[in-house]
Amino acid sequence: MSTSVRVQQADFDLSQEIAQLRAGNPKVGAVVGFVGTVRDMNEGLDVAAMELEHYPGMTEKSIEAIVEQARGRWPLSGALVIHRVGPLLPQEQIVLVAVSSAHRGEAFAACEFIIDYLKTEAPFWKKEDTPEGARWVDARDSDETALDKWTAKAPAI
Image 1 (cartoon, helix red, strand yellow):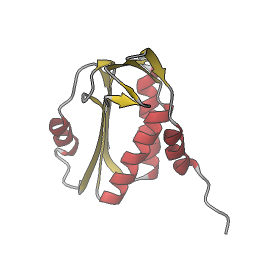
Image 2 (cartoon, rainbow, N blue to C red):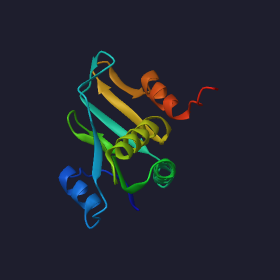
Image 3 (cartoon, helix red, strand yellow):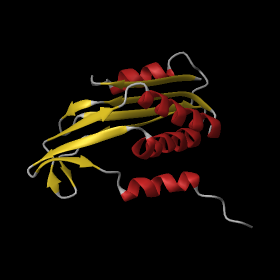
Image 4 (cartoon, rainbow, N blue to C red):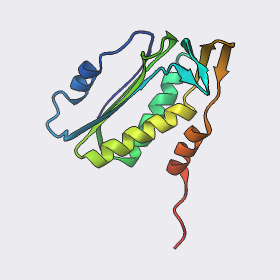
């Protein structure tokens, strides 16, 4: 399985990244991707810009561990995570999660799993510029709830 994890300031080309993920593997029957972008509003306030910080080395290892967990759950052909850092403006791309597999079900589940873990477990810090000044952004309750579905135990029979 090909795996690529990149943390970078530069933007990425979605179609080029997807083409590279599936290139040369005739067993790939599905590619699922998620692109997160900067919104111009959060929690009722206008957002003029966002800055993402990370801990170099530690962040990449954390993301690689998340991808390894996905590989342990689903038969994937490939996985790609690109997460941008530095200053970003509304509508700019922040993150790409893309996975390939033989079948769509595994690809959808793995992609959702990876982004749910990224939102809560990867060491990134977000600061937004708003009319009220700069503010650090905490994880949302909905992100924690999304993560819970992957860690919930099956009901007893």
